[in-house]
Image (cartoon, rainbow, N blue to C red):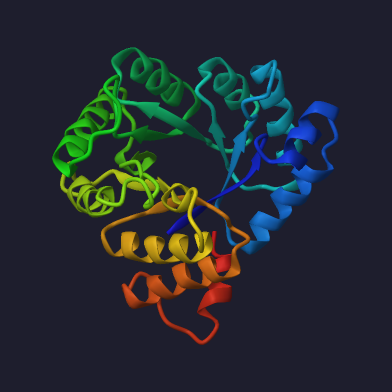
Length: 263
């Protein structure tokens, strides 16, 4: 599973202050820490307090790339801010994210084609997040069709079935797992899948444990990537172990270290 490090986000106090003060220290510290821990992308989010998302996104992209060579996932509902960041990315980036709504899909997939970027597509539309797997898969198919229309390779489309907190949407969990399974049948080659892992435990006790268990269960259903806490050592160890058990990686005694270092 690909871990997309979630920590460079203006919602965190230290990153929010870094953006406001234009002090790169915290951003670069987290860029390096997440890379060492095993992240394969760095999620970059200006946060809701940003007064000028395009300028803040550009600053974050430049500062993060000074500290790490990892590709970036540019995270915003402001597509002008994402495009401003894409223009500065040294490696092909990821656009996070777009729902299955036609005007937004046209905007995002056009950007993806222009900048050779991957896309996270959300299994939701103007009506919100469906409860059942069948409706989620139908929206995923719309994203697959749009990606194909713009020439995006399926390996560069990451579909997010959308996870709700288990304390308020407990019955959604099995539907998410079934959606993950069915997404793999939508095309050949199949699109990839991704979740915002911390969503499953939002507002609960034992957040880290819930995240780890959900990640491993989802991997068995076809999960390819997660926006997650790359510095949660036990999460990384669980993911690395699941890859061994699922025969995704070759076993060796140092398999956790190998997972952290693999590109």
